[in-house]
Image 1 (cartoon, rainbow, N blue to C red):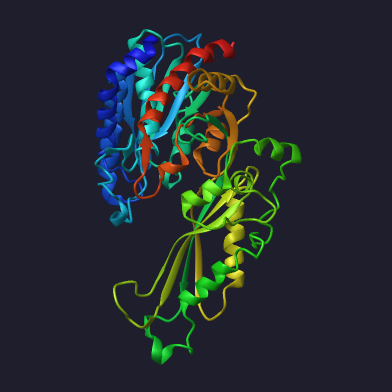
Image 2: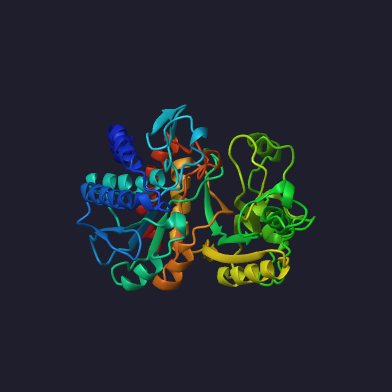
Length: 456
């Protein structure tokens, strides 16, 4: 057993309990009542980084939630790795679907069940423990900086400005991020692309108050009915998005690249079975993996109107609302797409209602080059720990701040994730396999051992 494995094995229960203490902090960035929890989580990260061996760690203010910064600079001649993660988590609703309390982590069937178990407390905390392991075994090969933010789940609205104000502090040769996944427990992969995001909200207003649906139904436009028709019109029978000029900047992937993507193992029958669906859906002419990796999409994330309580209340509602996300491919500009969306909705809205549209947040897509030194080090690290070469994949998800890092700091990012599709991030009963947590620590350490050699 290597000195790294030996240290991890000797401290694995403590690692886990420290992670659990972080998870127990309900750091939900989208809910104002959890503002204090964001600071509590930042202070916990400060403590964890210092105890792991950093020379410096502090909680730094932004215009929103805080950032925890830490560093260990051992030699200016060595490369510097900036570790990025986030301490905030998604809301837990619907709470009744959780099998255990979302902020009281529980181990079942070899998995940690809790909000943030995977996204991103479990994954980001692996970096703190990998860092500690290298410090304690006198094996640190690079300068290390940590930047753990508290607003990723709401689009990182203040981190770009924070980076711009702290360019010198955040100087690095590569940004290392564990907020993505691998294909399967025994099939490692490196995420080489992320989709961008445009997140919108629509409000449709009809009469000045809720009306009796018997007395007014059929004579006054129902905002819920109108909104349903608007949403239904946003995609056609072939799964294409109908917003004019939406596809103007979409880069068509070559047949050769699509053929390479198709080599990634994927079983459509198991996919459908795992989701309890009979058939998949999406843009005609593309496979399921292509639909989530190289093509944009539009989805309603929430819709509400009228009476939704128990029993009947026959109202014609005054208002109807929807939240809509559009996942974008690299080269699509999220601000341009948001403007096109708003213009289109206002153009097709009937005069029987008033409609307002606003952009909530968004970000650009990102592509990571597979020929840079950090990618090669990551590839070698996965192969060393998993025994097989990782497959490059493009993710359907978005981490809006990644493209900002490149624009503001001039530094590329490596997306070194260990999550699984079955981990149910953003959903009730989020989980993270213990095996992935510990293997993740090992693989991160392996990256640090290889990076200085390929960086030269």
